[in-house]
Image (tube, rainbow, N blue to C red):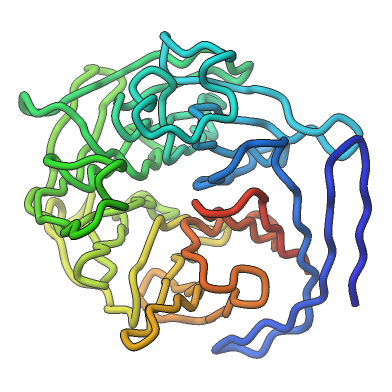
Length: 331
């Protein structure tokens, strides 16, 4: 079944989708919210604790907030203080990322409603619940300037911010260049708002992406893209400050996000080595590392690499760097 509604220049498409999963699932609907004209790359998508949004990052350096079909999107936040709307809005010029910013991930602190943002090349930022120009908290660690920050989460018990640097030697502009090869210079880091200090927790990671703190705050999980696996880093208990492989995946994993019940979603993009065609999958797993659900997103994201799956109250929101819409799967 298929339905299209055009309201104030925004197109919303509804499609019925069957979810293929480890646990049998009923049919759910897929809703497509188109981004404003000439914008693309909704890499990260989230709603705040009140269910407002979704909020979304764009390739032109903005974070937008969806106000509903009657009002569309509003500019919510920016990272670069040098950004100007006439130069940056709608741009896809990779050489403008230092002027315009390139937010690649964000996470709300549900205690303060502050939004923490990782800009790929500019650093770690925070902006208040009213949005605006974000404040930079860190641009380097151990004397090494950030080049490719790519995921962030907040421990709601401690307020500590955890984030990943995919590399210390290349940035997002390099990954589309011919002959590009990722390296093992990635890091897992934390920022403590009480001391304003950044600490490197792990080094020599093979493209780490998107940490997510567990519901009880005892550990976090993150993807190691280059090794096709999910790692767990213990924050508390006898195993604190140690890391372990939770499980491996058949493709390239991206940003991990926790659900309200404590499970996690990770996008896994499976590349056929013969055809180089991507099959975008979503794996939902529990705290024990057991995959409890698998979803094939090929119907709406054919040959695309999805970057984030963010679920709240049964509604799953999808981010993808190469499209111009937010995907929403509802019960």
